[in-house]
Structure formats: C-alpha cells, structure tokens
Image 1 (cartoon, rainbow, N blue to C red):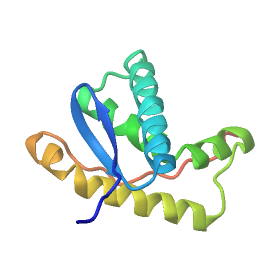
Image 2: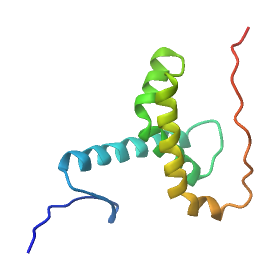
Image 3: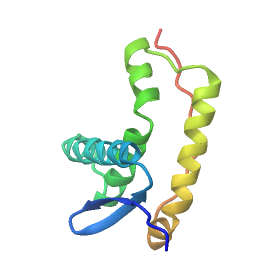
Length: 119
C-alpha cells in the first residue's frame, strides 16, 4: 500500500486544486487571494462589468502578476517571449472557462486594437 501526501487548496468549502508539494499549494492559494482582492477592486471601477467577467479578469491578472508588474513599472510591454507565455496561459484558462463563456450568448468578440502614443 502506497501513501500519498496531497495538499488541497479549499475555498468557501470547495476543493479548488490539489498539489503534491506544500510550496505549490501555498503559491496557488496566494494567487487566489490576489485574484479575490483584484476582483473586489475591479467592482469599484467606472466600467460596468458582470461579476463573472471581473472574476475571470481578476484571475488572469493574478496569474500574470509578473508581466503586469513589469508593465506598471516600466510603462511598456515586456519582451515578446513573456507576452507569448502569458497569452498561452490565458488561452489555457480560456479553454477551462469555456463553459462559463458558452452560457453568455450576447457577448461579441472584437479585434484587439493597438494603442498609439498620444501626441
């Protein structure tokens, strides 16, 4: 008989994720804490968005906190490798959240616009 140690992250009585190491479980729990704070902060923004949208956006920001921190510090996007890595992570999360996205049928996709510098 084998014995396995499993570290489980539980939020509001629900098992969110299980990990083999305490370090990974703590990092995920910390990311969820950050996403919760960001979600609350997004609810106070002047832009009106649905709760599920702010939750998804907050989670994405928390997952990409290193890229976000770099952008806030430098005022520009990081090298393309980091951006591509963040996009791959976002695509993976989007696939996981596709069930939520399918429930909303009045959302229209828009192409991403490039920002230009102000004169």
